[in-house]
Amino acid sequence: MSTTRMMRAAARLACAVALAAGLAACGTDDDGASDGATATVPATPSETATATAAPAPEPEPAATLPAEPVVLGAATLVKGTAECSPTFGTDTTDADGTEHMRDGSVACSYAMNDPRVTGGTTHSWSLDVWSDDQGESVLFQWGTSRLETEGGVWEGTYRGTTNERTGDSLSHWYRGTGAYEGLTFHVMFTGFGPWDLEGVIYPGEPPGVS
Image (cartoon, rainbow, N blue to C red):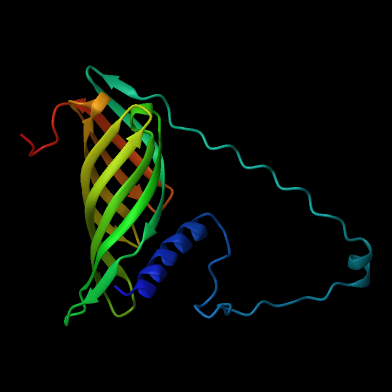
């Protein structure tokens, strides 16, 4: 996918979130023009004379972490959110229209209800893209991931899909190192951003690792 088209796809995802929240900031074309005309009604003299200031908006509630993690024997169920910032890599397009991006990267911040998996991540980022004539696309993406926390480091990989209708659905598998040696952290990364995270920390190796 060209960088411009990928940026537009990302913008469509952000627009969908804004519309769901009742915002009106997404009604412009690429050139900044409004999607529709806005009628202007002149104020009457009495309206001008009696104009009053609008009430101050209610402050938004502070973000809170999910409930405490759930401990099930030696395993722990965890939840949280992620904020991420991507850097696009090189892109190519096949004759059939399939698009590829390689050598991208993503930096994220995980805010979890367990300090063992709360911290910053760096991801390598590759993806393949299939689109229709209207520009809707589905992406398959994958890469490596490193999660650094106050107590140690997790190393792993991820893969999954993305679509403008459903957002991301990515599966991350991490192996603990240092203080987390012998532990696995699996987390599902879903939504449009900020992304929802739900996972489990358990003793043992990720599947397929001996």
